[in-house]
Image (tube, rainbow, N blue to C red):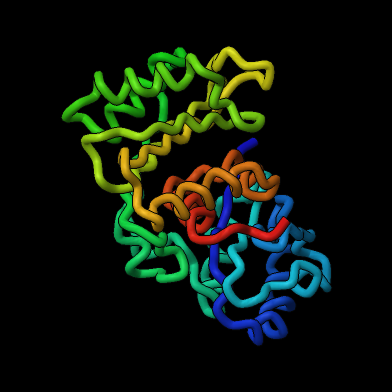
Length: 259
């Protein structure tokens, strides 16, 4: 059964004293399991718990989600989003359902330290590892797909980029670009990555210039290190909406998340 999410940024700590009761009241109206998850603090609690909001903390700057699983999950998220948006900054509204390079302008909290471009595709057929790498190369640099694909393949020959269960992160330096590029392919069917960690559902390619700036190195370092943190990896695999997924990746690129 699919999980539905509402992703939001906490920008007002005082609101947690006012939002807990209405969220708990509404949570009891739907036939689904609802949890509030503070990704930054790595805390979660059932939303029907009277102390749920207090238990997860909700400090200014935290990235959080409401996660719903069950018959009424989609409806619950639709209703709860209106309540959340009265108190916090919801990621999804005002953005079309494709990767957007303008999120950082609307939400400065998600602005990466350097210029970055984001790409996303959903696999509709079963992919091999090579086909996935080729798809990532086409997403990121269609003008020179073969060269970028070759760079990905050579990187995989050195060692597998399957970094954690369900997630691979092929990363290379590539001369034709002078920005940070992040491409994502999601696959419901696991991709055989030739790794003892098993199949891959999320391939996240990171491409840097051959002579990256300090800010570009910081962005890449933050993202790669945070990808190994349990809350980020878990939420990336569970998050279905591509804009929420992009927001998670951007948030992970801004700074190191406490563990």
